[in-house]
Image 1 (spheres, rainbow, N blue to C red):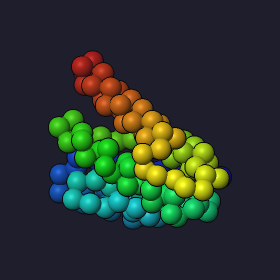
Image 2: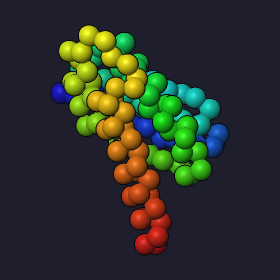
Image 3: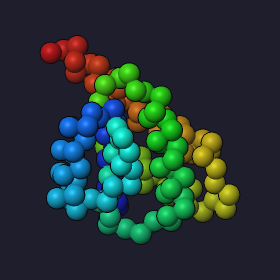
Image 4: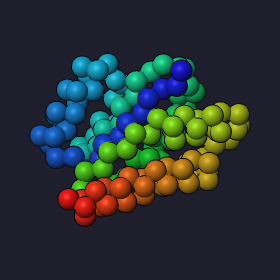
Length: 122
């Protein structure tokens, strides 16, 4: 069974408190809990913590560039686990590695496009 990862970015203070409460009650670990961003993880499997931290830092860096897009929610379970599988056997992993940056950028872009499409329909 894989770990579950969810990220919510561009949160205001009140909304952030609500999501923190939800994730704590659902027994998620908060890997990022910054001023306007939460990355929550529900643990089912062991992972290499160093490599997971590299992916987290890249994700956080990327999401900072999308501050003007409103609240962004992304279920990163498949993407995150796929990235960790790809980089698990790599001896020297850097944050600029395409195996990390490309899938994350795709997931972020997809979430923004889906949000725009959803808002334009209603």
